[in-house]
Length: 325
Image (cartoon, rainbow, N blue to C red; front, side):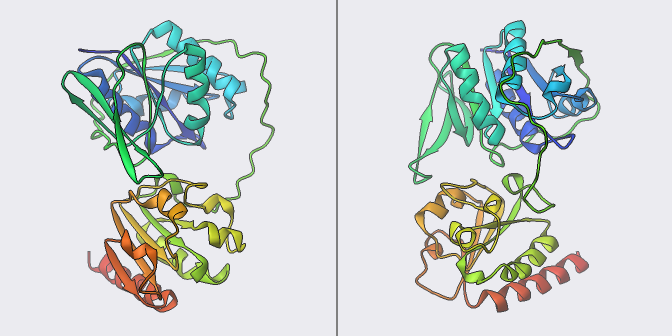
């Protein structure tokens, strides 16, 4: 059964986030040969439309307004609801990001629709679109289908493989005018506390430190390794509570959920709250002096040793590999 699927493209600092392409790939599966329409909402987003077409969107609808320069739930929901009303899609896909987690319940409530959140896999089985999502802090998974009404889901970053970019693809790009009014929130300024570099939630490689780093300076060897691997720095709640780093780097049940290709845990014991945020990483490497640390139970590879000795050794070896590559 072919469907029209609406996909929200997400931007940051004037560029598309990778989760936008993953959402398009998810939309292709849900559409089953139907049309995938990408939506861009912002102050100046028209120039980004073709990129979404290259990654699989059939059409792009943009909504531009100075009031949409920064995300607000009121402004973005007005814009997206107007496009939904005009397009009448059978399905809606949004990234399970900070923006998506805030916006999707509001949209679902306005549409009186169900919502399947934090989807990690999508497949067609028995004539149904089957969504897989983690439950119980990632200790189990459930499969869900939508039997009636709008199919509405958010997809976890780094779980749905993107389609190959094809710059020969073409598609219609249209602008829709939406009157954005009665905003209860206006963003005057955005102050970023996270360090510059790779976005933690979308990073393919994450180097995370726990209490074992002992201080803020203890993160320096981890940052050097992350630079060599093109990765991002993360942290356990223990490291954040000890003021070794900012809470924006926290990974876990009360922090960010990450699913990189490679996760290196340095000086992290492996509390269940932390495992909830990283246990679905594709390859997990644990470095800890305690051979009984819980992190080794989920690790694919374990190194029992002092992280201040092991991490610099890894950094040097990776540097050699890059030189010889």
